[in-house]
Image (cartoon, rainbow, N blue to C red; front, side, top):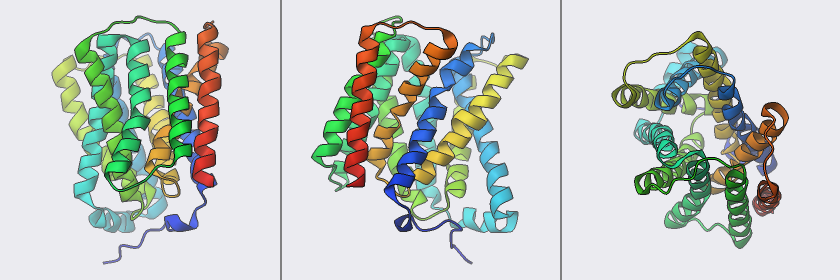
Length: 303
């Protein structure tokens, strides 16, 4: 049975290519909040997180089937490291559920700041624990970007609640996202990105959907809610994670998590241009620091 991937080995891809793909993924993630603002649906955030995983899994199935062909796709799925894919899928499900639960408990500002800020730090520590050595340039850029991201989010205002359980949940969401990325990096080094994302998100959806029903009750969704979920599932999750996973083939997992901080940058710019938000000076200072930090991370990865 052939286990050969149709994608080129990661060693042949340039870091600049992976960096560009991950930054594009961050831009798509940044459109999530703006897209949700156009919906008048009162859909529970737990269902939003779970349904977007389900829609994304269907997207990956259609994409992988059309690009690989069903017989070859089945062979590649059979050859996938399902133990690692199951753990990655569990981390993806846990990330979605803990993030939304944490934000609900602490408020959007604190919850988002903790989640996006802790992810890169967790990734760096996990890479160190696994024998990797993120350099001084990476740490400097990441800490600057994280600090800028926290200022950017908090500077936009919103409810601030110091709920201990909510704080733990938000930190857990950052940890599970970092774990997902490290596992995903191992998977995509051996399997095609489309096959990897399909396997991981199938597991994630199968875990998240029943959990959403348990915590949020029966699904109640309007037509506009389905439209928003469809956009989130295909664009902000499906296409975004396909880009992210492909990008990981040529950059480190820790760098991938750090570059994902392009998400709050995009969300901030869309809030200015589309929603009409008018944040304070603190948010603009955070934006400048975040962009400077990302530039340092990119420089460290490409040196």
